[in-house]
Image (cartoon, rainbow, N blue to C red):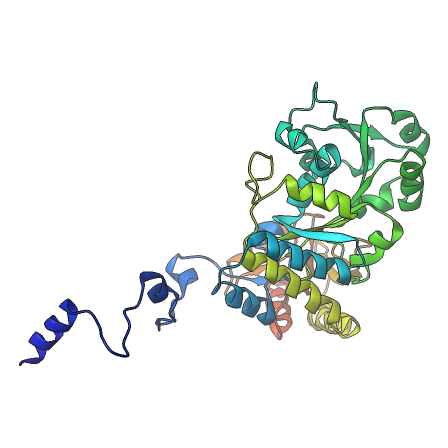
Length: 406
């Protein structure tokens, strides 16, 4: 019998003996060997050295190898989603000194679901009524300091709640009424607010009202992961894909057990609620847990020394260029890492801020910096750089400034 006939016969005959037919799902789950595929190049996407920071528009941070390994491992098995949320939530809560926690679809989702949980509690009928509050008996107002209203508060209004803005503790006290559902605090704006954390908490406690704090990008320092839980905020919301280098589309809502339980009723995988579309898959849930665990265990003092060293490399490369000045700036709250502001005198360095930023962007390699703060200056950060990239950034900035000085 010829080889072609043998193959044809085998294709028509069920396998026998020790060989078993492979089901379609088993064939899909096998580990096929693929040639390496550069999808970014295939799509014509520009990649860049990120000296700007972990902005959402720039795809935030890069996940570390242990997070990616956890995601890959989780992708190969079926599990019950609610059980993953239970287990991961408890692990994160323990790490962050909270009663309970859940992984959400980013910090925005944490704000929406946390607010929803405050409004509905565990009443399934109320859960189904959001965002319609009128005539439901649910409270409807959230008190926020005027200086904390900068866009993120819109997550709260997704639930149907309305915002009451105040400036002083006296105004906040006067604003509390039978409709007040919660007091909300945006941590990054704390330095400009007239009411600080403890005053806010004391006022809420006096009136038996829950509090929520948004600390989206407020690690480092690592202690912030548990600081506000210990301080007494009922709900704490944070992004997962910033300095912790978890999945960009993940976040964490942590706090009081009853409020986390209520928030989960308002989200996936359940239906008939405002959060059904805020899905978090098992890979992101597990990846977020590993990211938190790994981040807490990092040598944060060494990280800071590394960042200072990278800043110094860039600073040293340009500090002797005539007309150029540099200043190390450390933001007080959000993205609390060393950054470098580079400024120049236009009479000596004949370049505009936008021009320098654009040339860095269009160069090879492409480099992104922060170009929206002041004229004749830009700022850069280093905590998203890969090892050695500070030298490339230093050389390219030096080249552009020298070219403009010629």
